Length: 428
Image (tube, rainbow, N blue to C red):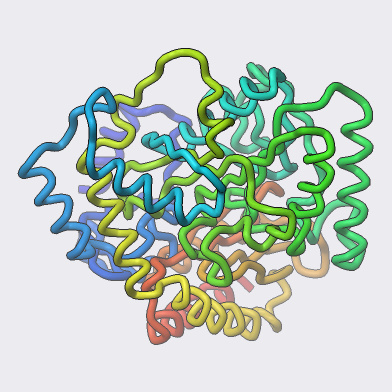
């Protein structure tokens, strides 16, 4: 059955539409932190549909909200008042930390970032953007143009002029050997120098923890130090929270809060986890930035009633069950367990991350050379052990990505760590 479906997939879908595994997997249903394939094999899900199944598979509260909303009305567009959209926007505006916030809903993180770029460039009257090396912001024409990861940027053409800043990767690059404080100082000096050579850009866009880049991050406080420089030049700060938002990092509800000493971002983008699988993205911005557009606009599918009902139910469950606290507690245990496991595995360069957003970077033993073959081999081996994980990284996709639903239990974390240990040892 899988071979037949794969043949049909190849016949009608693009060659560049990536599939995991030599023998691709069809997932048919899920429950909690587990999914099943078409052959009935059960897997512990440590990737959550690319960090999108945030709370749990088939969460009854979300399923009920979607079913009840579908029985009333599914869609009407933003041309009409929409109570679920207003209610979710009120919650997100209040939780964002941005004063006098306005919220615009989209259908994806790509579209959210695209909107943020339009707002920033319009508000500032500049088409120049600062982005981080090793970054990823989506697959639209503008988002690809600012992505600092060549594996996910198929064209150099762009409506924007992009300048790339140091700092997104702590353990590679010219500043890797510095202390955290000196690393921040060097990156800030690089930013100051960059801004001295051209006209002021519209904004800096940055993921607090780089997602597709392999869950890399700078020391806490880097973007706060950048913020001080940016404010002097009138440059906006866009926090791309598509993967880091909603408490996944455990320590904070938003990734930017680890860098919040100089205040919140001007613009925040979100998506993925809030819908728990439903297509929700969005932008939060202070009102003067959000309202800078001088023409009409709508969103046909952004904010549609059925996705807003799912988002509200999912957010309520997240808060009421303190899943941010669970991510901090269970994620902390999992990170320490993985560090203990990998301490004696020469192919592992480091285990990094926070909360339930964990990366394991693989290298050729005895070197700093990225090892994408090993990452692919571990991905396959983990599947054989009944565990689904992801991979990424700007250096030849050599990092394993671990991001289970935030309701992960301690027992499931131990189960996953055991399976991952066997998968890692199988490649030695």
